[in-house]
Amino acid sequence: MKCSAKILVLIGCLCVPMSVFAGVLSGSVSVHQVSDTAAKAKIMAMNSANRQIMLNVLSKYADSDALSDLIQTTSDDDLLNFISSSSVSNEQISDSAYSAKITVNLDNDAIKNWLTQNNVQNWVPVAESASRFTLSIVVPNGIADWAELKRIARENNVEIETQNITGNNIIAKMPSGIRTKFTADLHANGWKYADNGGVLQIWK
Image (cartoon, rainbow, N blue to C red; front, side):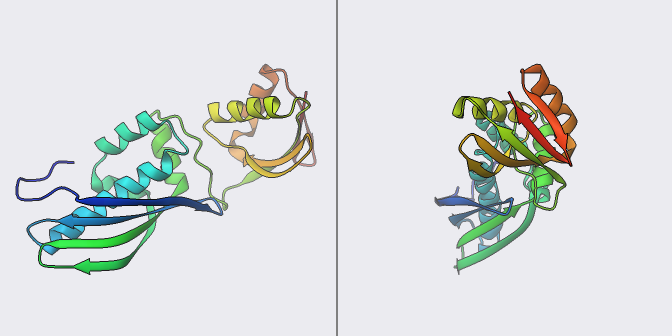
């Protein structure tokens, strides 16, 4: 993102740890921006915050290099399409500067579609409102089997959402739209599965 010679670049950006609640991707940053007017400084601060938060949050759920390139080449206006809500606190404004803590909630479905359409491998969690199905999994080899299942899921750009783990038994959920492809990949990797009243049972 280029700025004119009169506008100073972002002076400080303190990143606050990302949090994920009920499938919602959310993050905060504290910014301090200087420009020739407070209004310009605020716009630049908001745009910078949006980009930094998206990078911070989504780097946990996507290929980081491809994600960074995509965010850098996407316009500020287009990035706004992936923000479901935002809030501002600790706001301070002077004649030529703007400071605030900015919190942004991202739209999971819009983000996932955007990354997938741009060939960025990702495992963005679906929103809680999306249709999901339950998996009942037996992993005889423990962590090794569980890692293999997670790999198969991520190759389909989804994440297995763990609900409960007891010994070698795992209860989890996945998006309903991926069920057919996921079961085909399970079979190809030597796993067995069966439908039990809508619950997908998986074992080796």
